Image 1 (tube, helix red, strand yellow):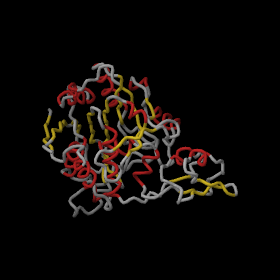
Image 2 (tube, rainbow, N blue to C red):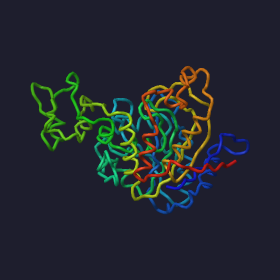
Image 3 (spheres, helix red, strand yellow):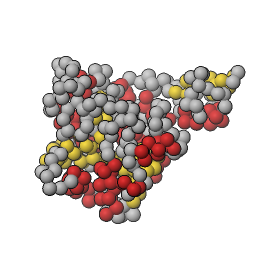
Length: 368
């Protein structure tokens, strides 16, 4: 594919606010080419795990949503429930966490919709054209129902993917709980028997008779199980879990394929803010200090190119002295590998380019 344009501006703001500068960047990058009139516009972002302070503040979301409304669109903020047990594991707690972190209509001017519903089982099955690992992705219903997808990403490190940017925000973030299980695991769910109360919710939700209740506890017949993951979503005690056994490179390929499913057949636009660049995901209930200084804002119609541009910009920075990156050897010449040696972020971007989601080649256009 030919090189894609990625627009960039730094964090200097003398006579205008940073949200106003973001709007100007979006316009320069061609945002007004999108037909938003009367369209449902999903602004996919991460609301931040309670206790983590590195997530994007709601001011950024408000700036994006205000621009969408001015263009005649009907924006909403959205994310899917998490697979792990934290502050966003089901729809009600997820909304509580979002509101506590400022993502409410009074601050952003729009509603939050948890894309895969209360239990994480409200999903659409979307074919992945050219998918090697995923033939049919399980995507949160609200994302599937949207007319336009806008990804608003906090660019930072990640302990399994290398970094989290546009592709991970769309792919992992757009998958339902069962979809997340498919990305993380090559195997099938298992039961933490000490948590199980034998209620049978899993058995009632399974079309294949895999969960079996014996002596007040559940076990999963691995021969019957097809690995759909619906039992994970319906368990009231979160006693059923995935194996989390997929290799990181394959995980990254699956993330790319899920990202393609989210934007399939729809206009999309991507914004990445390379600020507060923590070494780990915003899903953590804490955040370590940034590994490099704040860099700036990026915008593009290409989710692959914007990820590569952000990664290159981070790798061009000197590590902050007291950060985890500053404490480690940099002989690998890649900041993300230095922080998480078992990761290779290129496996995601290369695979995304291979399946036609975008280009790893980009032209950086700097806006003052």
